Each structure stands twice: as C-alpha cells, then as structure tokens.
Image 1 (cartoon, rainbow, N blue to C red):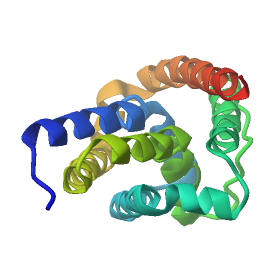
Image 2 (cartoon, rainbow, N blue to C red):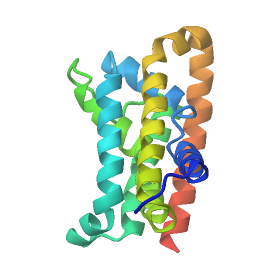
Image 3 (cartoon, rainbow, N blue to C red):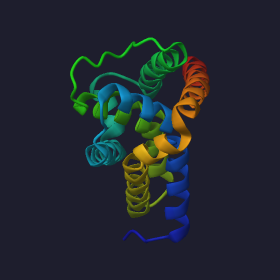
Image 4 (cartoon, rainbow, N blue to C red):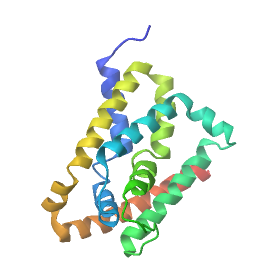
Length: 190
C-alpha cells in the first residue's frame, strides 16, 4: 500500500516546479498570447496534467513503441526550444499563427515543449523510480494549480511589467531558452 508523505510530495512538487518553470516562461507565454490572441488557461493546464500523468505511466513504453530513446526525445524538444529562443531574440516569426484561434498555440509550443517538455517527461520517469506513486500524482496536481494560476494571471502580469519590460524580458529569456536548449543538446549528444 502506498503511503502519503508530505516530504515526498514537497520534493516532487519542487522538482517538477523547477523543471516546468512556468514562472520563468512567462515572457515566452506572453509573446505566444500576443500572437495567438489568447491562451486557454484551463485547457492548457488540463492538457499539461494529462501529458504528465500519461508519461508517468506510459513514457518509456511510448518511446520504445516508436523506437525513440529518451536522449533523442530530449534533442527534439531542445530543437523546438532553439527555434523559440531565436524567434524571441530576433523578432522573426518561425512558428506560424495563421488563424485567430489560440487552440494550436495552447498545445504547441505552450504545453509541449515549454511546460511539459523532454525535461519534465524524463524527470517523471526518474521520480517514479524514487517516490511513491500517490505522492508524485499529488505533486503533479499542485503544479497544475500553479500553472493555471500563472496562465490566468497573464493579463495582470503583462500590464504590470509593461511593453518595455515585456520586450526586455523577451530578449533575456530568449537567450536563456537558447542556453537551456544548447545544454540539452550537449548533454544528450554525449
């Protein structure tokens, strides 16, 4: 029988929070919102939760089914992050948003790979080996609440930092995203 453990829940929540980094991704999310017109906070949160729970239980098997190893999966996610970083720094559109619907933006690249990318998915595989399943599920739920609150607060955050602040953050976080992507590429090529 699995046991609830506050220490395990706290550990899982903190680890996932740092990997998902929804707070650090706010400038990217604001930029995506500007392009798409809006972001569906509840839909994005639910999809992120579904992806995390699915990958917790089926992750390794899904990758094996397609003949993909975790390293290749991480490299694919890193490539998308490179494109996002370049787009943010240069101001050139790489991801096309031809319709006014934000449905596609809610899924890609917002949910995957920004919130639930290769790092989150591989972390879930590692957590499953170290923690009780119920504690991981509660940690995922707590992170879903944080994601939802941040996404629902985007307009307020955007107003608070203003246009100039948003542009500065966009360039800085574009560079940080590029650095993270390069780190992912380096660590997964070796």
